[in-house]
Structures are given as C-alpha cells and as structure tokens.
Length: 274
Length: 156
Image 1 (cartoon, chains in turn purple, red):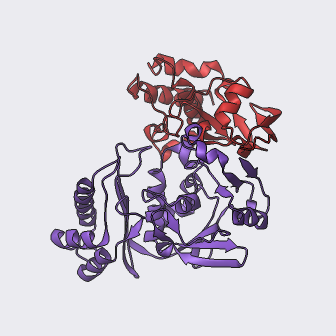
Image 2 (cartoon, each protein chain N blue to C red):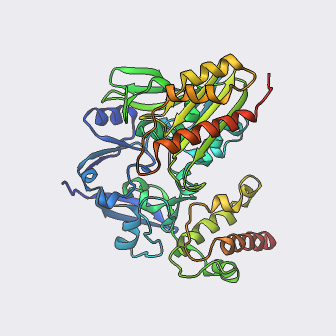
Image 3 (tube, helix red, strand yellow):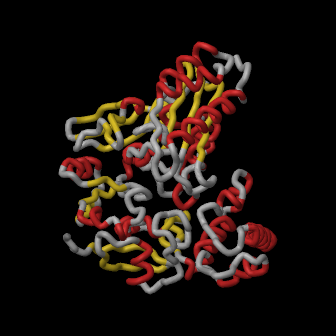
C-alpha cells in the first residue's frame, strides 16, 4: 500500500490520474478495514491536507461547500441552518457525531452508494459538482453525475473540489429516512423533497441502483400543485421512476410500499400551501 | 504489498509524539499496539458502536475509521487524558455495567460537557447516539451525562 499526502491540488490530481484512491473522511473506505484486505494493496491519495478544499462560502447565487466540508461543519453553521434546513435534516441522519465530524458531503457523492443520505438532499436542491482534472475545471449537475451502480462521470484524473448549491426560496422541503434505528443505520428507504419557483424535486435513495431524481413524480406534483396528487397516481409515478431491489437490508416489496406511504404522509403536511 | 513506513508527528494527550507507522494502520491500532494506550476499545470496526471514540482536533471520532497517516500535525486526545472524576456521575446513575462501551461513552460525554451550548439544539440522546451500550438501556447514560453537565455548570 502506498499513500501520497499532497499539499497542493495539482499534486493530488496527478496522483489521482495514476489510479490512487482519494481519501477524505475515510468513513466509508476504512469501515471493516482489517478484513478488507484487497483494499490494503491499493494506493491512496490523502486529501485532508489540501486547505484549498476547505470552507463554506456564499455568493449571491450559491452556497459553495468546499470538498472537505463535513456534515458537522454544516450542522454548526448558523447560516446553512437558516437557509438550507434540508441539508441539516440530512446531515443529522448520517451516522452520529463521530461520523458527522469526519464524513464529507463530497465523499458521500464520490463514494456513489445508492443509500447515500447526503446526496438526495443536495440533488433536490439542484446542486452541481465542481470537478478539477489535468485539463481544467468543469461543473456537472449532480442529477447527471451517476451513470450506474457506483459509476460516475468523473474522469480518472478528476477530483471533486466543491459543491455548489443554488440559493432559492423554498416553500417546502422534507427529508425522510427509514432504517433499523434513528442513528447509525444504513437507509432502507429514503427521499428528499423540495418545492421552489423552479418546481418540485423528488429524489430517492436506496430505491434504485443510484440515488435518483423522480421525473414522473415531479411532473404529477407540478400538475396538482398546490394540492398533493392522489395516492394511486403517486404509486404509479413511483413505479415508473424507481426500481428497488431485495438485498441484505430490505425487500423490494417493503421499499415500494413504505416509499409510497411515507411520501404521501410527507406531502400531506404541506396541504394547501400556495 | 509495500510496507514502507511513514514518519508522522502529532500531539497526543498534550504531548508531542513522533512515530513510524505502516501506511495501512488505523489510529485505533496505533494507539493500542504502538503507543500502549488501550483505553479505546474495538467493538464493531465499522464506525457504529463508538467504543473506540477519541477526540481529533476537539471532535469525537471513531478511531477505527481514522487512517493513522491522517493525524499528522493534529491533536489527538484519548480517554487516558481525562480525569477519573468524570466517571463519578456515570457511576451514580447506573451508566456502567460490563464496561466495554464506557471509554467511548466517557469521551462523548466529556465532549458534551465541554460544549454544553450544543444542548440548546441537540438532545443528549442525539449526541450520544454514536455510542452503543448493550447493558444499561441508555437511561442511566443519559442521566449520567445530564448530571455531568450540571456539575460542570455548577462549578463554573
């Protein structure tokens, strides 16, 4: 096992291009580390020394989360709490303080788990991902970031350097997670929902091979707004948008049923808002 | 597999240390087997149980999920650094039984005591949710942390 500990982004990118695996908070990569012996033969590039990836910044258009921003960094930030309660709701569901203090929003995106809890909240807010590689910088909408199970559009030489979240006025946001317990559990069924002047967003996790936006659900929500759609319509749309599987954590039947009921009850809390 | 060692320096319980570590070492193992600090315990090895909790730059972390190479230049505090007096309120409230989770519980509790302003936004239960205890049923732990925080505020 080789480890590179760069102090500049350019150095980190050159290691990434050579196939080094990026490490930020290590909360995914180091789980069950002693028995994941295949991972001991990989090479790693430690991002934790890159000060240029730190920090939360605001512009007129965006909240920008540097790639090393942890869940706890946002939970502690009064401005993020005030303007983006959806992000805080999601952060509070990720592990507990020992994970929130280490896990990063960007790592949650790059890890590519369909059960990621941070990704649905960011995707429901139309977040974009800033990637930097040897040929420069580009920005990709998070809802175009995944191409399949744990597969992304990131080039071999690219690193996530920041997440951009557009600043909008939201009339409704909600985050739901169903797991074996409130803390520390991997999600069986989850979603984030948001409504602004740009319309409805519904993003589900643990309901398909990737965290996924739900265009059919968004369409019927936009059509019935400000009232929630009828439950049979919700179920029909969800079945078009999602493809849950049965695995170690749950069954496809359970996920389908709980998703529909939880979405219905969540939307009922915003009844008759203009 | 390459086993080139890495030389790292960091602050451990207030003292500067410099050691050679293997690249694949976890902070938990470095503390226990290289530095002889066996207070942090391995429970699950996947960041769920909190028995290996230490403070990294003042925040609770699972030391089983920290690559040792990441603590270079940083501040690490373990349960050995805490005053044994911290245990009294936990003992009084029945917060300990077999003791396996206790070092991690105490590290989380000490962090809450030192950051009691957080309790206006977070409950003790939420802040202690990363520490599993299979003996006490948690009420004793929550009461013990309440008493610890109250004693600190009384002393201040």
